[in-house]
Structure formats: C-alpha cells, structure tokens
Image (cartoon, rainbow, N blue to C red):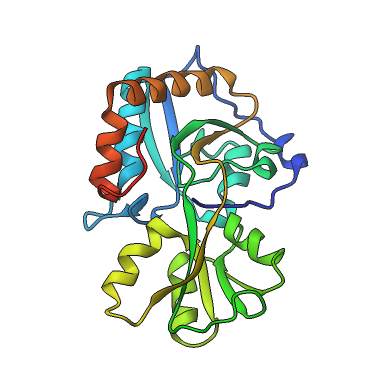
Length: 244
C-alpha cells in the first residue's frame, strides 16, 4: 500500500519520549487522515476509516487507551521518532528502508498492488511524467524506473495533476484508486500492469518500543485468528480485498 519515507537514521537518536509500557496505558495513534478508506476525516471532523476501527479494537484488546493524532504524511515518521505520538497507523507499507529508522508490527493488510491511472490510453509509463505522493513507495519505484517523477504532498493532488495534464499518469495503491476511477465516469482509467510493492501494511513504532510492539502484535494475531480483521477489511474495502 503506501509508502517510502526518506528519513535519516540519525533522527532515531533524538527520540526522548519512548513509550513506557509499565507506566502508561495511553497510546497516541498517529495517522494522516487523508487516505480513504484507510483513514480520513469524517463530516463530524473526527478521524474515521478502516484504520480507526482496527486501531480502536487493537487498543481494546491490548488494554490500552487510544488517543488519535492527525499528522501530514511527509513528516509522519520524523514526528513518531521525536515522540509526538507513539504509533503510526496510516496505510504505511512495510519496507526495508523504513525498517532502518523505525520498527513495524506484523501486517494487518496483506501486500497489495499499486496501479497506474491516466486520463486516456497510450500513456508512456516508462518514459513519461508520472505523479506520486511524496515519500511513498510508489514515488521510490517511479524514481528508479526511468520515468520522470513529479511528487505532491497529498494523493488528491496527484490525481489533479493527471486531470490538468501536468502528469501523464499517477501511480498509487490500487485499493485507493479504484473507487475514484469508478466515480470519475470515464475521465480516469487504469492503464498498464499492476505493480506489486511493499510487504503489506503494518503499524510503525519507535525502535525502542519493543513492549508496545509486542502488545499490538498479540492483538493483531487475535484479530486474524477470530476473523474480526477480515470483517473490517470487507466492510471498508469490499469483497475483493485479500483476507487472512
């Protein structure tokens, strides 16, 4: 799913507010709030979506109190490392590059395909101008593909770039793009072949928070075992989503 963060290992050394599992039961859950159906802000101004449902249930099973924190994507790893919240639960794909800076739980969404969307057929995906959200695994893939990468802060801006001709296509998570393509009435179409990226979506934590990571791993395992994670996957992504 999403994404490749360019963060330095040195930033990890600045973490001074690591979670102390034996001293606190409140966990601050950092999310983007701009990537439906994974996470978004609803009409009441609250964080909502698949990851809100999953995160609340994980905290319940782990005996923790959740406080949700909204943070822009491009600074979401640095602000975890510096202690502004305790986890990232924001459609973040597990990658080797990120794992050098933070730790991950096991995945709660299986590896998914990324896809190209354009305004018409015949787009040059190998040598053209391709849009992607900044600091995502899709941006990293495009940068190494030979195509010209144009990056934007939000996923909405990547699609706008295709619509206004600033980019030939956008590469993003297929589950995110599918409803937008359907809603476009033919103005946007899938092109090319899907691209498998990442190791699934997991929760990001500071490298020092082994106890917290283990609590969430136990909770995720229990949700997989009793089928409740599959129920939420189908609720938010539909019957076509891969389940456990």
